[in-house]
Image (cartoon, rainbow, N blue to C red):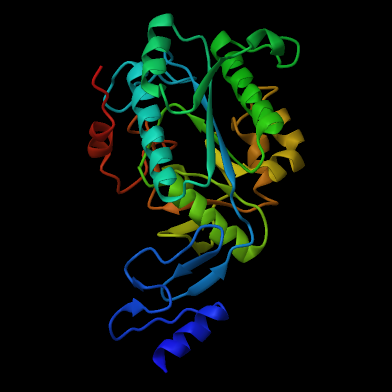
Length: 325
């Protein structure tokens, strides 16, 4: 009778959770194992199951790279005070590890990565090319001349190049992206589980609220500087909070990129205050969330409110992504 009952439950799509022996006979798993199935169902104890309607088939990752400028628009040094190329190397290494972790669990998701390079030296480019070899990562050069008559004249060439690389990245996403699009800067260290958690949590939360969303991988300290109200949501393996501000590292969908293209475009035409002015406007209309705890670490100056996420072992994550040349 027990076996027959289990078959009936599986036929109708129900799962049985046996709290006595802490297992699920319908899934054939212990309850402390991964119970969710990507593109099918998300199961979090004790909240139960969410049917996945927002399915992920592909991710386009667009990384903006500058291997020379220490901290753009600031006269400060980064945590650990290395040359900028060292942060870029470790950032890309951590991203590759996170991509491979996702693929090891969900090989059916297509992941493509494009690096938009802002005038790196030949030596630095060779270092990065060696690092990415065999990882389906393409490097393209920033076409700064294309934007000479589009972006307003800036106080210095670094600001203009930053706006140009952002606009070129958005255009690549609009012209090439199909599903999820992940815009990343090259001064973030990512936990190995970052991408898998982002994808799985996107599916669960977007399916639950039945709409596309924005996601930020970092838990920035500046989000705690005022008494802004927030909602807390359950993702795949952590909590997420709603936010109304991000920097230029975030994940979204092709649909939202198209819908708010005017905001993305206008954000790149001038150096605004805050820099992400027109991106932040979108979050008054659409849901944007960030993780608790952080999935990525923004490596800026230790005193920067836009930088180090709280309750992270910075040194450990830094050392884990060291590259032996």
